[in-house]
Image (tube, rainbow, N blue to C red):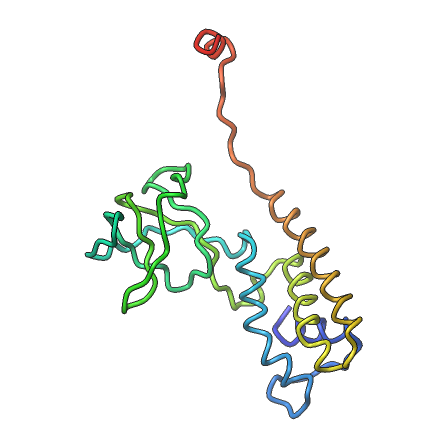
Length: 196
């Protein structure tokens, strides 16, 4: 589904006719163009969608910030940091040990951990990568953002927000079902010996 198809899905949800291009001289095109990018980033940032999750080794910045011994450059395409890892480890590090700050060059991730990797939600603009659940939620959120300006009906805004919340919750559940963390094997006999 391309950008115009997602916009037209949002418009159809509030009873507004389709557009052909974002640069056309219609109020629907102007309103959706004004809200599209912000709404996309908002819905992306709200959850760690599988299609938008990245894990990279961070670039060390030669500076210290307060109690944090290491500073790393925030990934340029990151919308939201989800987890910090010691390089090569599969399990995330205690997330209480980093803080997002900034310097004159941009955002930083300050930590007490050397050789850090980060898992984050990337700012995905390629609509062919969006999964169907995300498109459902995103189109309802976009519909809610433009509904009043295009129709003057507050009830359409309310209905679109309620639909967004429902579809977002459903999409998150479906997305989370595709992730499985391996369970650690715990020998009950060994545990009984040490625990009592």
